[in-house]
Length: 296
Ligand SMILES: Cc1ncc(C[n+]2csc(CCOP(=O)(O)OP(=O)(O)O)c2C)c(N)n1
Ligand SMILES: [Mg+2]
Image (cartoon, rainbow, N blue to C red; front, side):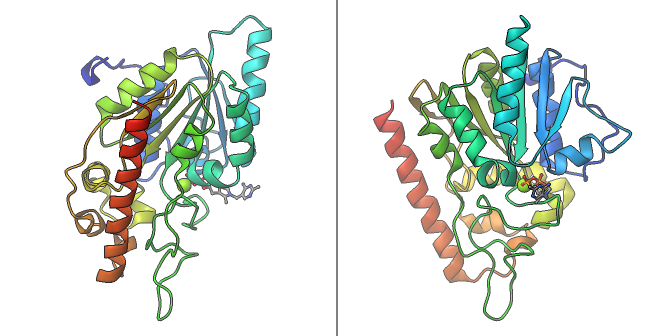
């Protein structure tokens, strides 16, 4: 499906309370158009839970369940099995959670569901921090970024650790489909979710989703920044289908400064720290290329 062929019907409707320029809202609006009405959603504590379902309003036009922060994988498992037992095996069960709910607190139930190859689609929308509770660092926050728990001052200079490589952790579970995509590359996004919709078994897609509030950038620049993440190599678009690993876009390798500059969360970074991040990009790309060769 091409972007212009996307259905007009909104299954995640207007009237939600996301911030202007929210990458998560862009992701879920488009995602629901692709998945269609025969979908049941499991969503734990995160921004999306709040902006999509602030009582008494609900933006979801499909059955939707608020689950605990740590158990999206388990709740999606139970829901899918119950639907199957009732003869509704064609219903898509979508677990959608933030980076905190996925890479940190929900990792055990996610890993267990993946290892059992449950027939569910799990989406992590990656805004690189715990945004809903006021911008705390997660394991998915990049090196150097300011958050309220990785402060900047005389001795501290943002996050000291590098971003956790969640997609590779999911690939190590040998599930049918793992992919990375971004709200900045919407055709790539459509292609991957259309594919994931058709595949049986466990599917994991991580969506790069800028957050103007937490990243401290102009609300109009979310898409531009998402594109820059890919062109600098900070975020790589790839997929791993039944073990076959394909990189979908070779970056231009624009210097990482271009990506960092428009974001207040990186404003304090010194040249030596920027150089560390540039080196991380190089090593990550080399590692991804090696996997692509080994799993061609
Ligand atoms: C067990 C538990 N611990 C902590 C919380 C508080 N809490 C709610 S949402 C949230 C942050 C969510 O971060 P993330 O998953 O990245 O989603 P985002 O808000 O960034 O969209 C936290 C810590 C909770 N609801 N339950
Ligand atoms: Mg988050």
